Length: 258
Image (tube, rainbow, N blue to C red; front, side, top):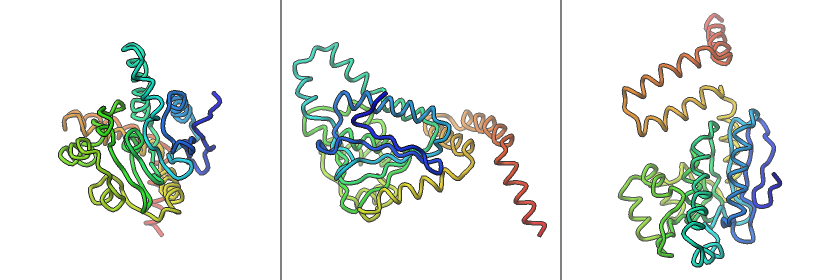
């Protein structure tokens, strides 16, 4: 598939970069961009060379949310068309959830509405000192259609999430770090580089263990302890059989003998 609004950079050192590429509209999502985004995620998921992913935005914004023109079109759309539109949007969080590779959001500039939700779908978030965030749906009298109400409370807690969802107020980078919305704040000019640096560090780890850890963490947030420990037993059997485990164990013993 040829991409117009999504740019995928070939993996280097196991790290692929996905760039939202509609800078003239602050990378706001329109329908063709949603289709491309889902196709891009499928492409990444099937690429065995990719061990970690950095997601960022072209130009001066990460993503300003949904395109206002699309929202205007929804005014005259039928209920069937609206449901179809939502189904396409909702493919994105499901595809993000299925990705075995870690995804790091390198948030440059603003992340509003669907843009913030996109960052929340990632496993780790970095942002620049001038970055801002808002669950701005309430300002238009709508709600998040892509799972923002599911992701946000899991990241920052229920009461904080409800405050941001109900008020639509803007959160600056310092507050975002304080409440756990982002892992850390870096200089604006270094957001992408810091994202790549962290992604390379993760990509250098045993891929099977990284992938299974990701699955285990997310499973543990919704499953029972007994079910989680049972799953971990299966995962341990898998990693004990990987070449990376055997290589690292042998290297550990070799170091201790010297």
